[in-house]
Image (cartoon, rainbow, N blue to C red):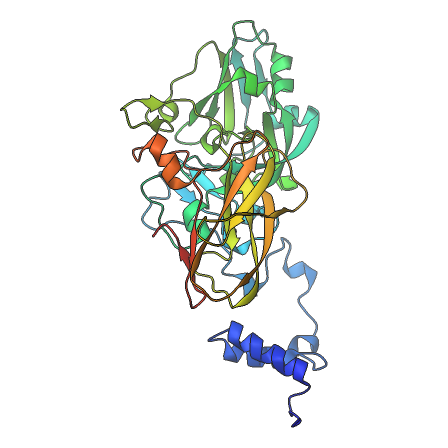
Length: 413
């Protein structure tokens, strides 16, 4: 065998495969070769940045393109949203700086020392609480997802990436006080059936919450992933309703009015209702049904022949994910994916499936089954019941087309 000046056969195979997997990145491969052990890359020759130059930690400059996806054309100060880059993330927790946003009147700049929460209506003792008062109550921390009910709509399942399609979902560890604890402090009257939550934003966003949910797992949260809420997420206080549609998780919370009837506010009449084929509309469809999406490989990514790990996220507003099935042949057959621990109630669950791709064009997809036995539907099965007039609560299976080149694209397109 002729000796290769670049080294032994195993190393040559590694370099050849790496080049095939990184078409168009020859310059980067050359730089990586220069930095490969036992060589000494330039960053080992000088001291690095001092701690004092980064009083709040930031990602590497080489990860500068991992950012929230802000739709173009929206008047961001009126009705705004930004999407989590799902295809760039691992695990189940969303970093605070990448957590999706949705707001209706801009992001208020609230002084927590002046902020108050009023609890009134059908209570024995109306309360006005400062943030210090709220933090005196016993605290709890729980991991839960949050999802916009328009993630995505029925008519416009467009876009290239996983973020474009269903990026209005994120997951965090939330810290706060049980809403039930605070309501017990005020004392609910027997006729109390609803709690109307109002935000302190310019839209004064208002939603009605069934008292049963308030006394179950609802939280008044002031921290997210270990730090105080960011302004985009409702600083200094928001409601968290695990498993319920995102719009109900009122941010910048200033008032809880305990009532016998719902408020029938704009957000639960003109918006956030489900138009049905017979001309009626479903109202108060609070729970987000089981859903999943493959995040790698997904739109705009490229794979190579041979081994590829399929991974993604699944979630359900009704409890834990029990199984995730993956198809690599356009839904003809399905295989169980492995669920990565922890598998928590009303939280994102990471799933994984090893796959050896033979280079044949195909479509890959996933479907979630939650602990109630509910199975995530196909788009055709869902629209057979719901029609195409709805905007909210589309939890259909998301397909990805894999071309012969290895390029992955939106399977709805």
